Image (cartoon, rainbow, N blue to C red):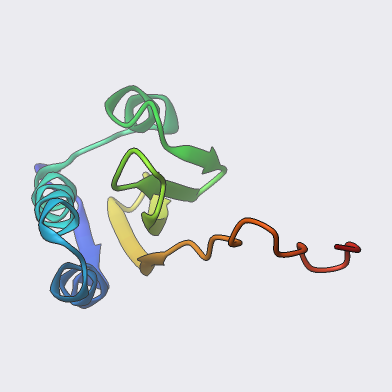
Length: 104
C-alpha cells in the first residue's frame, strides 16, 4: 500500500474557505499529509501527529496553537482508509459566562 485512501476531503476544503490565513494553510497542509500518508499502525500515526488526541480509530488533530480549528478523523489502518468525519472550530466560552450546567 502506497497511500491511505482519504474520504470526506470536502470537509477540509470547506474549513479552509472560512478560516483565516494560518488556518487555511494548516488545513491544506493536513490534506496533503493525509493524502500522502501511509500509516500501518496507530503508533506510527501518533509518531507523525504527536499532538493528536487518539482514541482507538478516532483521532482529533488541532490545526492551530489555540486549538480553535480541528479535524476529527476515523482511521482504519488495516484497510488503509482515513475518513474526515468533521472539520470545524471549537466553541469557546467568553470570560464571565457560566459553562453549561454551572452557576455563574
